[in-house]
Length: 125
Image (cartoon, rainbow, N blue to C red; front, side, top):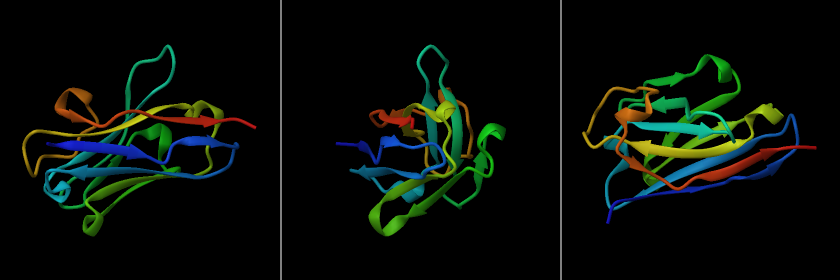
């Protein structure tokens, strides 16, 4: 069974840091591009970062310098390291992969086919 498990969400103070994990089972995650998306209450889903199987990364302009995406292939996991968090970063975060291997890194949710469960990130004092 193909699964993506998201972990690492929680409550963090403004200016703090948090690391989200996207762990795959049933397939080799390093063969796929991986995207991170978030959705705040009342807002549309937003692509925040992605990484290709070759390690090419992209970030949406609103989070550049704040987020870092990277892989640990030995753990079959992609991470999203978040720093200098702000209340506006509060959202449900999910990771996703496309059905085709070795695809381009994109920040468009309709290019992804398999999704992990959402992890709540709340930034509040």
